[in-house]
Image (cartoon, rainbow, N blue to C red; front, side, top):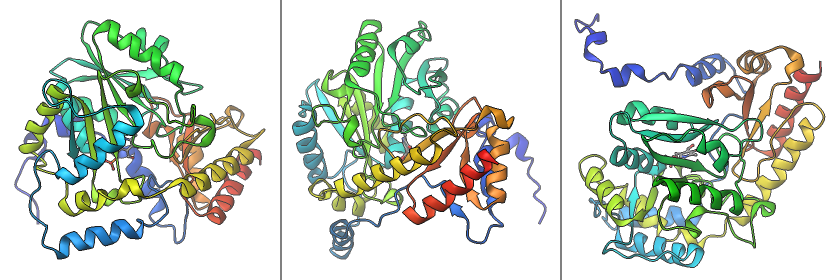
Length: 387
Ligand SMILES: Cc1ncc(COP(=O)(O)O)c(C=O)c1O
């Protein structure tokens, strides 16, 4: 039936300004493929650990299905603080110090944090390439998202950030290990960013959704490099979805300065209300589970990817996560979107860089795929580059 509504008048500028066409185009192109070699997926290829499945089922069967406290169920908050205490030395200090809140995914955390911080015209500096949500946080909040070009090594350094700071800059957002590059920033680089933000009165937000997926050579003194170990004036954002293969459970958290976290709680109360209850009760047990065997497996796959493109294409070495951001060899004379169309024509699904960037020179390959699938896909991609 024809609609009598004039949607162009009804839809807000906010909704109209968000363009989802880049990624949709890839999926449209792929829709007719029967059994694609899918290297486009942004989530792990392992099942949720049995302990977590059982805990979620138990919570549902025990009728613990109601709202939790806005801030999160006390058992999970305790588990989070135990982890943060041992890992980065943070402990809850509700009267003016540090707080935490459990959120509906890391996306929920990012949205609410930015809604609390950015007024119309206020600026947040984010890396380019970026996680797809980052630029949209401008439209969603009214703030202005300023992209920090990190090509070709994808390191968001203090020097690159400093050039972009204006009197309106309120936030610097770092993401390490990064999506779509897998690049991990070192402690020295993070310390410089912490110092810069402190000197300029800017809040540093650290999106650490891939913290557990840090490969051995990127750990420093056996530890994951995080700015939060150097400063409590940071907003730490982490998630459970990627680490434990439960992205659909929508679970993340924010920890940081008490007053900011309380503002986030206020907005959560009137939006998401609370994170999904059964996921919260399950995640209480998450930190008891050792995901290292999977991380080691991803590290081996990373090595396979680097070996496949060695001498053929430039790839910044991923130190974590499960992505590689591969440059389309300039000699081919193709944009990344054109190259990806060719790959899809040969049944290999990867995502063109312009979905994650203002440039269209690279593509994102996810190695969250079975080794055999990965090998087949790499062979096709390599073939397209060398033919
Ligand atoms: C860097 C980064 N941050 C945040 C998210 C959002 O994760 P969630 O599923 O927890 O909302 C993603 C998901 O791909 C991501 O890559």
